Image 1: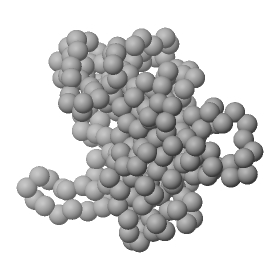
Image 2: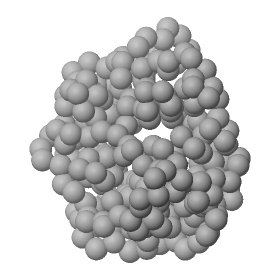
Image 3: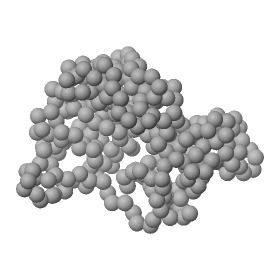
Image 4: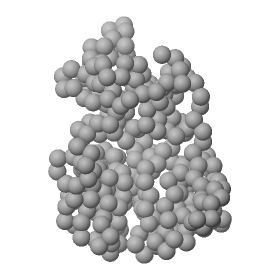
Length: 292
């Protein structure tokens, strides 16, 4: 299998040894890439830990094999936004190995650059591209501004523009290499966002008018995703993979200690419009709710 392999928003080029997300190249250590290549070459099959050992260390020279493989797979989960306990891509079979559970496609055509578009006044038609290489647009509460991720500066950063795409301003300069979700505070003054920088995905808050982004919390796992504001703007809910299991946590919007909200694996938190309930996705993929 030499042609690019695609799954979800990702593409793996086994010849050039590149992993891309929506056309953007992601950094992946060699051992993690080798394991990913083995998995996508045989989707649905169990790749045993012995097979991985023989592929990664063909000469039999290996130090702390179990730890090395587990660390390489953990980095894969982080780069793919996957969870070991609720896998979308890589399933862990304890003491046995791993299996790629997502469907894959092969082909030679390269994906187009990410973009977002506007459709003018509803009912009037006429679609026009606002920017290329800009993704995940999010409207401000009053509908006048759009926050989005852009790679136009050479790294992934948060930008804000008017709703028609004009007056774009770069808000951050964090050197991001990947991104994961941005959302406005209810009063429209702040933007919470996830960014892969410094080897970890972290949550930040930045003033919509500009300023120095604030790191919300220190998380040893670095796996913090999908921020969602409480309706009073005082708290932020997020998914964290700390401890190897994806759960929803809550923390003060100004930073500080976080509290675990869910048990038994959850992700993609969303606060209800009345602020009374928190909806989230569980392992069985059906939305659930709990009281906020």
